[in-house]
Image (tube, rainbow, N blue to C red):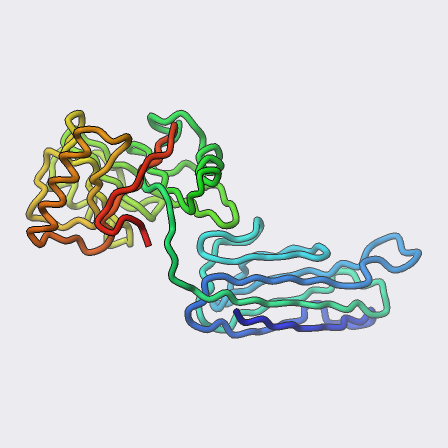
Length: 303
């Protein structure tokens, strides 16, 4: 982890309001952390405090967020950012912190800024990629599901309500990631689409396999991932073709262990033995709105 400490003295009689602190973000950074403090906070006998603000600008010159408070810690990443700051991947390039002297009543205010850059690293993550809230047939809110997931030791959760993209914004919590998704639900089969709030234009509602393939292609072109859900379920199986088209993931374990899952695991095991592999993930954790369930997959985890 790279750490930089910068000290700035802001004088009462200075005409300068914004003090730029440029810094370079290299490749491979996952998270930025900033801590800034200043003193004195309030001059002796003064009615008001000194006010020193913190403004962050990304590599494109765009405002990411700002605030003015003593002893602030700011975290920035693609999955979590401190409230009042945009979710923002630490892309390589020149970023800038602006220290702003809103109101300087002391002769000199001393500011200390600490910049930390946390690099990306490989690690195993536990999560649920198929979960319903009360926006479809679940019973709980996004916040309840987030808190339950953290209590059960998960690192991420993908919301996949039936035919309903995420309503509003998903809640944020440091160290946990909520991901947009939808379960496209038809009488011929169910499919999860992960990673985008609106993966396709228009409606999910289609009547033919060819129309669904168009929705799938558009979602994938936009960067989403598509999972064929519980293909051998006796209640809601996949009745459209399972061969002759590409998909990213197949769900082989859904909910508690039962004969449907055993049949699906055996089916996929035989596919693997015959050389049928998928391009990306081959796993399926299950954590419904009521209880946590187990994992199964060719790799047994999501990495």
